[in-house]
Amino acid sequence: MSQEIYARRRDELVNQIGENDIVIVPTSPVKIRNSDVEYQFRADSDFYYLSGFAEPEAVLVISPGRKRGKYVLFCRESDALREMWDGRRVGLDGAMELYGADDAFPIEDINDILPGMMEEKEKVFTTVGRYPDFDAQLLGWMTKIKEDSRRGKHAPYEFVDLNHILHEQRLIKRVDEIALMRKAGRMSAAGHTRAMQVCKPGMYEYQVQAEMECEFRKAGSLYNAYSSIVAGGPNACVLHYTENTDVLRDGDLLLIDAGAEFECYASDISRTFPVNGKFTPEQRTLYDIVLSAQEAAFEKCSAGHGWNEPHDAAVAVIAQGLLDEGLLKGSLEEALESESYTQFYMHRTGHWLGMDVHDVGDYQVEESWRELEPGMVFTVEPGIYVNPADGVDERWNYIGIRIEDNVLVRRDGFDNLTASAPKHPDQIEALMAG
Ligand code: GLY
Ligand code: MN
Ligand code: MN
Image (cartoon, rainbow, N blue to C red; front, side, top):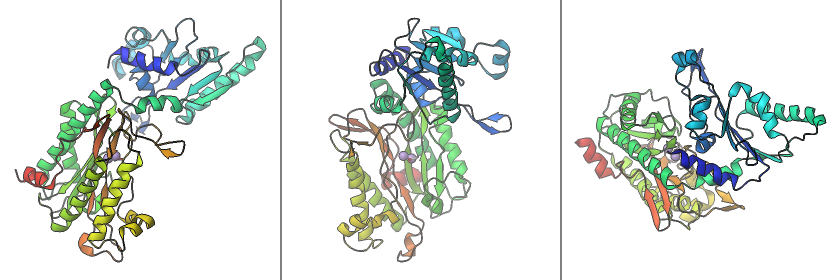
């Protein structure tokens, strides 16, 4: 994305704070995987949203009233030796020339410089509670300013959670973001399609995962938006199963929940299909219920509907389907009232999607479910999961199904960003037979 977009985002944020306030956002810390091996670094989403800066060890500061430039980046300095070993760095000049910073300072100097920038400010907008080490550093700077108060300087009066304003901003996706999310959706769909094409009994879950993720990578997605769930048979009933180590058995279903990340935007698709390419009657019955539930939810995805409406619509179809098949007893009203359906459908029908897979933004405003607005993107992911239990005919045991797509709210309807991943049972069987 171009630098103007990040500048516009910063301006939008600045419009919501006072001239004498300051915004301080650190990127994520580097995490150790084992010994001296690090996990692949991924910038903090808030930080990246405002800067487009992907290197670790960086802090951005926006100080609207600062005379020498309101946007400041603290980052790693250029260092020929370190860069030869560990990779290139943008450096201070690059931070200004390529990333639009008015000023850039070495991250090592932040303790000396940032307290001075916080002096005389009124409010500090920051992501309190996300990175404990950074919070401690921030308190240290406050203490330092207070100790210096004999010089006549005062520390900021208030810490304000930046989430409140920044996450409302992130919740509504702009044209450029939607283009990236569309791409991520298409890449993911190609991976899921590949998984259906290669899957056969005797393969291991991780082998199907490798084929799918190979498609993500070939399409230009460098990372997954989250750890892939490739869950054969009973593993599908473990909602966040990520071991992906079991062999796939003839007659079982395979549930895959996986999404490519593209330029820090996530996609999040679930598909469920028969390992051998042909649904059993029981699998098909429950699959059709989940698919109908998703279609009912889609009816409630345009602007003006309440956040809970797609969920309520999906729940009603699932509960009725489970009653029809004898998995639940009683009337629909009773099932909805007692929430007996949660034995088989225990999660919600969706979540916001954006730079984070479970993206930011409130679901309720003043204690009511918020209204869907153009530019919001969220998942629609009904499911049914049958674990053995008293009163459940064993022919249903261990069937786990989830169908998940990514929806963009438009004024006059919605777009399904992940529609190219097959999901109609006949379509899946035809694809797998080919
Ligand atoms: N992949 C996580 C979710 O569907 O919420
Ligand atoms: Mn999801
Ligand atoms: Mn998912």
